Image (cartoon, rainbow, N blue to C red):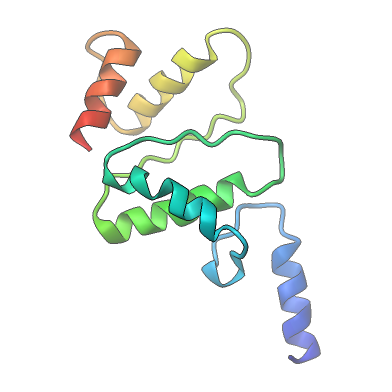
Length: 116
């Protein structure tokens, strides 16, 4: 590996944004396999401390979903806090998916999940 290539790898791995290049996405094969059911109509919610790779993992899952023809919705929740977090998450997911609310966020989300 040339010194330029090594510097490129270090720069990419040191990025403060989600990893977009699958070449540098390593060590998460088991997690991706555990999340494969999401590509068949199930839903997943990734949460955890900052800077552990949640966004990179989600982006790789979205790429796989697109290849399988699965409807995928990316919903950033980093700015949502406090009471009512779950309802806010459901409402934002429905909005991002282009779903007009007809009932409670929970029942509308269940309807969305059952049509995926």
